[in-house]
Length: 220
Ligand code: BG6
Ligand code: MG
Image 1 (cartoon, rainbow, N blue to C red):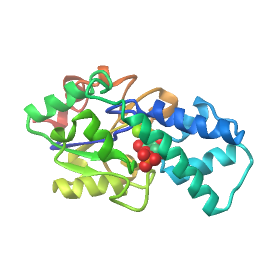
Image 2 (cartoon, rainbow, N blue to C red):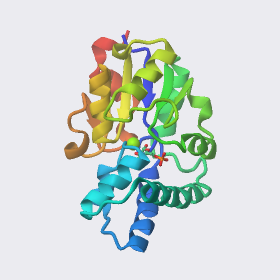
Image 3 (cartoon, rainbow, N blue to C red):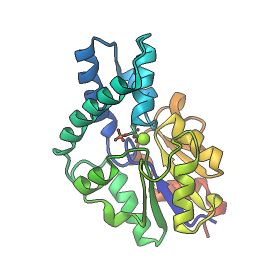
Image 4 (cartoon, rainbow, N blue to C red):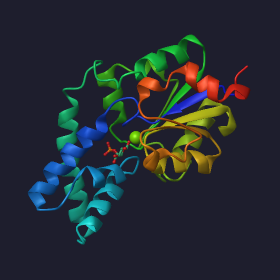
């Protein structure tokens, strides 16, 4: 039976994927690197350090670790500044409604994000009230597609993976959910999250009613 939900943050609760894009794009322009939305999609769910490595690979470039860390920090400064403008108006359509509904129905809810900035994002959105447990980029060392962040959330909620549904917009995130033995809901196109147990194009369609209808044997 499903007792809990674990949500990715960026691209599920709020559209930070676009803010991450703008920050990486600003850094790439300064460095003369090619960077577009297609490359940005590959960065969904993966850590900051892994992200810069993907961008460097795309440009057939490599850098020593010190330079790499400094440039990733520079991108992060741009990204964090852009978060100042975020308010509770910036939930993705449907996200806050779903979180509210889960609260009303008494489900346990955890955050399972790779971001080290999750605390700030939740604060800007005023979203802490929707979560029983916060798992973020500081909680585990192995990032998605490893299942660790979701296992962390389930353990803190005192639930088994098969009692939880994970919401994810990233290919690596759905892989992580599957590797951990969780049920998964993918948010986004088929070529990105088509391997999820259930997929919606956007969060607006991902209502509790639809989720329950799909996993009907798992809800009492
Ligand atoms: C994930 C995003 O949630 O967090 C990735 O999907 C991002 O794109 C990762 O790289 C790490 O985020 P941050 O905020 O720690 O740089
Ligand atoms: Mg995401």
